[in-house]
Image (cartoon, rainbow, N blue to C red; front, side, top):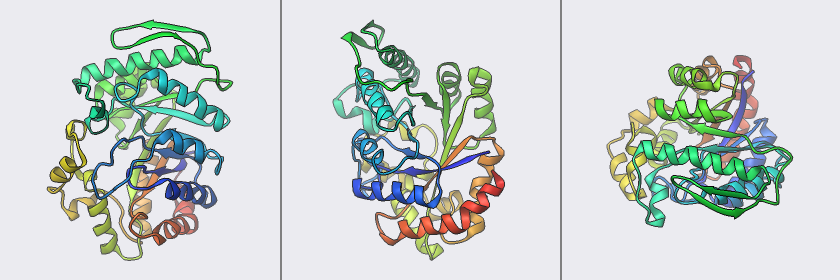
Length: 325
């Protein structure tokens, strides 16, 4: 049966709102949480980027829901040894209900230290080596690692959960998906594409969990919801690898100016139509995804939309989705 989770967007919401949404999600019947890990928002309009590890610590104290980062890049902005320590502490705080979701990152977040933004194949090499480093550290032993991309000297983690946190890897193309199948404990995707999921399973991911997620903009008026989604998340309509190469929220806004309201409205459910919200879920259920996380756009602009969204999903949408799951 497909589980249904809620996606906490650090790019759009500040700490207080994220904590409120985590509590409301559990009360409404959502079964798990995703949380994004960004240094910058995608656009200036989104306007937030709280530190994900502080947020996970706080969220673990107000909800018992499992938490997954969607996704952390452990390669440039933050050394994998530091990510390993953060993930280990998160696993302890959540009583073992933490999954470290990883990806190869975007220049938007990773360029801030002044490091060169590598090519996609090099980024995947770095990601694979970083996973090796982190798993060594989670063993509790002192680690010496002198690899192609990372050095770790006489490092040991002392605060560890009973079992290491599972590592899931995101994939939007064949190379990243193959890597996920080969080295990860699970797969993360934003598309219900059967081809990528099949590739993950063929590459070694058979029997491993698949997580997915998508965005909606619930609101009492459909056109207002479309306007909000287009204003807050126009980058949802940006195709291909461009999202990995732009360096600033202003550049994303310039590129996203080409995305129309019609494109946003056709790509996600906006407004109060129950059937549209149900239909958005169907492809993920049909793709045999294990957990689907749903994000609500717009509570940063309209404080009532968070409560309204959770009431709508609790009373109307989740019962319908569970019939499909």
